[in-house]
Length: 247
Length: 341
Image (tube, each protein chain N blue to C red):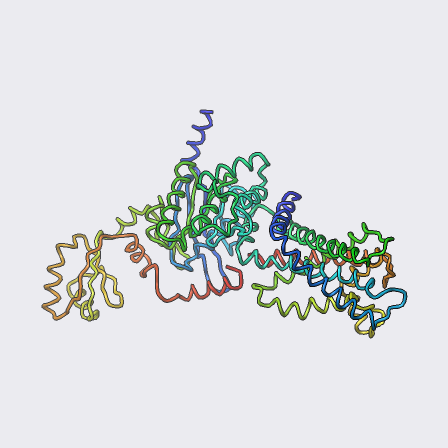
């Protein structure tokens, strides 16, 4: 089983290294957000105890992980359309291995993107020296697994990429805005705070902030536990739906 | 080891590689496979011949454990359909549409296949080289598959299906969409695999010439049922050897005339009547005389030696390629669109 997962993971990585120039284009957008939203809002938004740019940087790391992860998961639609999924489905490999291989592959790529974003932020002097990077990577990994699974779940419900724009507007953008990436959620109206507690990205970004020495919304172990819970649940739902959807 | 060889030969003669028993597959109310019984022997190059929507692909998918049957059962290499992984290890499957990863190179595509079928590293490397040689793609192994032509892709897929030494190779419409020259080339490869590697091959096709040229035995399948099964030559013998195609604008009159003269072995089409006969060239004059006497004008007469197409018409009552999609096609396409075949 571990070899099957590895085989599928390996393919994702080969494909990723083959198209590594795409990293540039997927990093540009978050950097633009960081600079313009960061500089723009810094002049009028005051967050007690922290510079807005420092607050924003982990949020943008969460953003790039969110987008790359969901996209990796959704890429199963292409595997289906271009037929490669059948090659995997007819092989003596369990559906669980396929889901795990795909998830790990997507998560690896998302963490690489997150790391690049973290490095850029650090180069801009936005990451405090007292950061615990190991724990930050842990949160990046868990967040990636969550959203690759969500991408896979979306892929089992869609037969083509046509509906992706709708999903982008109705699911991914709300996930991003509710997560507290751009503004502290404790100052938002109650309904918004309430909704944000059901958003895995809230805990992902909060966990990254905590591990980077920025005061988070909830204690770091709460972030970790809730996020891990989301991961397990979403992988299981994804696995179930994938088994059911077949070819 | 000589003892092994003799043992292998005795097994060859007795062993059914595939045994299908009353296999049924229903999609809601549509019966795609209707109580199919079939035995396929080791080393055969067996063809499932039928129009689109006849149930060929569905049958293959059930045998490859991709689709559970509604009822009935089958044994593949001695395993029943529940033993999914054992069956999958022992078969190779080449799908109708390409299932290669275009972004990867030929070698990488084969490598991931070897990994998924648990070939250890050394064997994997050795087999990749062997099968690339077999389909003459060795010099292009490091090219991305998206740069390959349709024929090269198909050959690579066949090579990949062979890599893990399957006992049976399933080919679903192996030459669909290929030009005649490439098709001939793919045929040669299929033939070689069957003869040189003594591999059992089961293919589906709706090309009559393909079934005729390649297969030792053919099952004609229509509306989910097997209507005839034999070697291409024997099938051709089951019908009269010649066919006279009479074109006329007075179909009704011609049919009445033939019936009045107790000629009953014919099939009626939109503007022609196909007459089954033994000695076509001799009866043409009589036929024309008879027609002109009864004021039935014949536009043209064509004498055709029997082909598999005639056999097909004989058993199914229609031509294999019909212009209009049948209701079965429509449903099949609808099912395909939802991804459930």
